[in-house]
Length: 111
Image 1: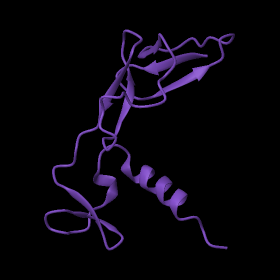
Image 2 (image 1 turned 180 degrees about the vertical axis):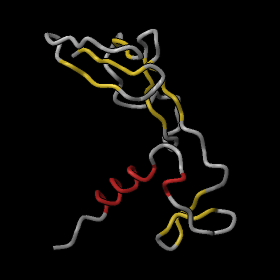
Image 3 (image 1 turned 90 degrees about the horizontal axis):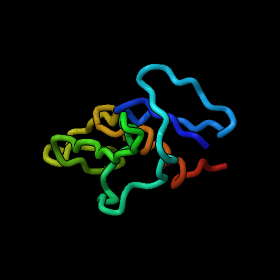
Image 4 (image 1 turned 135 degrees about the horizontal axis):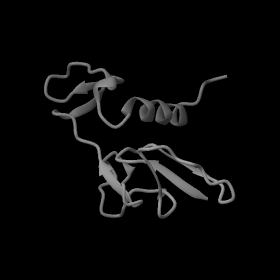
């Protein structure tokens, strides 16, 4: 597979070796396949993504933490200091999609 990445973003995709893609400006052919996991030195509780760099290398970029502690209380995400419910769309790292996938895996629909 040949991987292409949009420079300085996490947007990327593979194509078969025999079908190279004439990539537009802002994209680069990557030097290797996109890694499947975060590097070993990253805390497992930190969200991030592999970003494509203009050199064709992958770089792990850690998403920023919210400016306050987030807790799960009474089935809702809340500000850890005030216990005010927060909208998951305001959190970095596509948390909304990750939580939806996690809830679907842990709480399958009842028949």
